[in-house]
Image 1: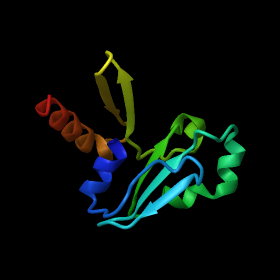
Image 2: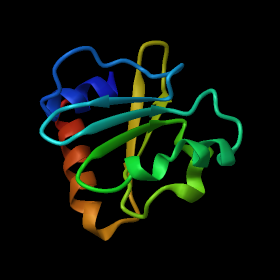
Image 3: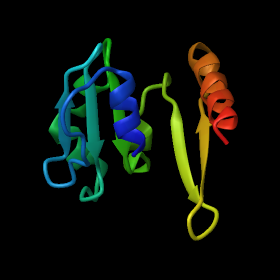
Length: 117
């Protein structure tokens, strides 16, 4: 649902679902959206062989599920999103960044998430 919401915000039309078996889905929107799922990847060298670096550069948004599998490859300008189960039907969403350039984006996300509660 999170990636679908990001896609909607970027003006992506059509179906958006997890690329578990294909690794990467590309979607056209106001900027390209790349949706990556690393669930089936075991080693960072497998990720490198896919050429994922090109999906992390330029004017785009890249959503990476299981991003901890490529932690050392993530750009400094990243927003880390963690979903935690807090109950049978509830979750908590945590936004974090070490990037001064993206800090205002994280603050807006937190504000918007709090306003929607």
